[in-house]
Length: 350
Image (cartoon, rainbow, N blue to C red):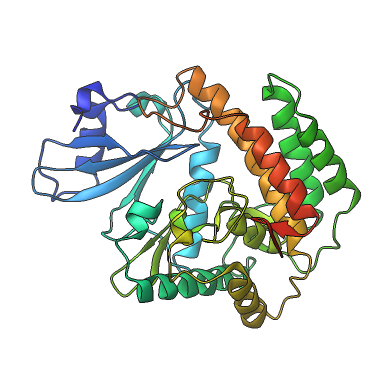
């Protein structure tokens, strides 16, 4: 483990004092370790001398916010959802004083479980457990989309209408501000998406980054924590399902964009099975799922471009990433999006 004093984004002395004020049972010294795999906000494990553990989240380096908006918004969402059936981690505390750690941050409880980021971690689950994990994942998503946002105080989290239009506008601005080369497939995909926006049904919470590796499953193979709520807003729930399918690879896919997905292992439900379960659980018509998968690929490409720019500038701390390895990763995502728009995911019909 890297010494805490050498970890970018961590002021060990200040954070230790801040933690002591909120966790009386804490035993010094604290150790901090950057969790790899994040492509946006930075996430660290925090452990004390007695073995207690927590998780700390803060913005990327070099992106110190004038206000604590992003972090405070995420904490607000998690706190509101903690009173519902949606499984979210308990928050220890939030800090908007940039004098403590140079940027707003919050700390939440750590829980043991499996995060199936890739085939290696997914292999820790038995074949039967993978099937259970997939079913739990879709049940939790349905639960999220059934939440009465006004009843839990999140009715003003964002506009409820015109979700797709807002997403296309937001991420196109991101793309234009970060692109370093022209990618014709990105322009074509944006054009097609803009010309065929589906009519939106009743709005719900939209997690914005819902996928297997943003959840923790326990030994009973239930989703016990849903993580990474930073992109959460209100809008069309099918966007969450579409984005989840961007990451949901199958073993027989002939076109793979994201390598090493755990869901390609034996036992995980197919996309068609998950789609049918979602429709049954929510009574929603998901026949236009291909559009939302295409939107998910395009959005991920826009996000990836921004991440690559931050990574090259050193804003992602000490972690390494292979996101910019290989040929034109953004272009590959756009090509996959065009295929999904035409009704194909992974080389198979939706």
